[in-house]
Length: 497
Image 1: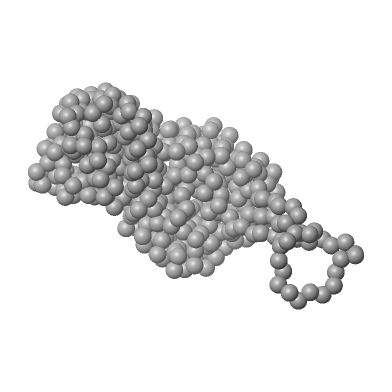
Image 2: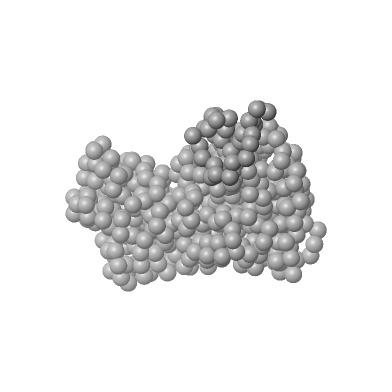
């Protein structure tokens, strides 16, 4: 018998009856394990109404009160992190160690948000004019919406909602319908931590639920992570409805390897960053740009390491799990076929993998292409699977131009032992997040996450100081408290001085 999942509204599981539902699969077995309710526009309205009611209390709660709840939530998530990771593996397919790492990275944002008292401080200038002081304050927006993807069902929502809640907002989260259970457990942990009912709500569903959030008049902002076409739709629809929107889109992350690089480190890094989480990461390395004459050695080293990887059920200690759905697996496999047809050299074919798991699982093993050229779809498109393409270039300048000419600008890395080359690269590359001998340059929570170009719509990145600015509005107060001897009428324009 399959489990039934429903929304979390006003501090408890929803009590209604859904007109539509969706299946949740175990990607390692291909079996339907759960059924999840899909929200209608009316259901979303119910969640927003609960959040709006809760904002009256939470938006005026003291910073100390909010911090106490955040600390309690942090402890509960840390206590239950293995349980959260097991839910992620069961519904997304990533191996348990990877799922546990995801929860840990999300916890870093919770810990950062616990510093809300410092991060929400304004500025104060005394005596800008005679008897006049000026100071700034930051206040919450109200009800905020979060729409998160399937690849990080715990971490990506945690990029946003700890900061939103720490700043005094209330939240309606729409997680991916493919792996919804982690969001529900996090909602229950918020309740246990003492968060008032209605501050954190979860609605499940598809485009109908998304559109209801994007256009709802009582939702002040939208935070989104997903593919660029959907990010563009979310950004345009949300801003047209008068909302503040941060929409993090797709990626095609390059790893530039210079001839002086430590090739053993580079090969390890390419495998780790290309095939972790089955390549279903917006920060995955999907293109290795080899500056000759290192390509032959690198390709051989990477292929050798790939031969040792075990693909299978993430609960069995394998290195890489299945893809999230059969539809997505087939889409990624179609890119492998397209790469062959375009003339790239298929060094390792993941379609031939023999998995350690059920035959009906959504399997595709690590795949390696060599001699890839920029006009091929395996280079131009975000594949979002375990496919690594090697592009050969003659010079650093040619590699830099290749990266800068790509429409995506999310993350990139350079591998070199030359500090001057690394410094030159970080100055010249047109990408938002850069690694120097680090293949997945995801910043710590106190820095902000986000790319350039088609990888970000809007001008505000996730978490860090930018996160607190996104979830608040600034006010500047100019104040004078005159003593009784001052006064009189003056119709002139007020000036400072």
